[in-house]
Length: 171
Image 1: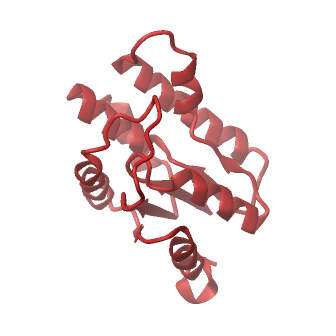
Image 2: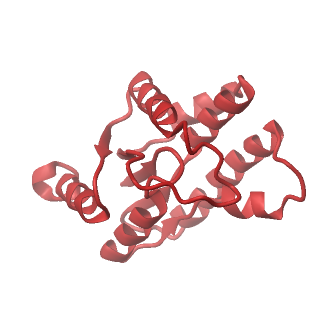
């Protein structure tokens, strides 16, 4: 089973991925963009975002090779596709193809209702709602199963646990 936490900046993805991985006693696929961007000594480019997508998929394959019963991903290539389109008005066809072909059982789409926390890599404090709608549009367009998460971390975890419990239909 593959679970992806996705959504705009500063919406709780990493916190939820870590909590869920700890609850299920499995590793999680970290977001590689932060380390990649930290290593740059310049502004990122379109090619950097494409390279980050490749690294994100490689990180996913690395964790998947450990055969965890559940693969929890703190973002995936949907983020790179949206990032390319939003910042550079273009995207590689293979990103869309990979998004369609890579199997994800469920996306948890994080609403940007957490207070903004500035950091050097975050750049869309006033556009989080717009970007959230881009995620929702793409998830619908590509027929991906997703659940919207809002509220506190505790409320989000309750909703995740409901959807992952036997009565929620995942296990």
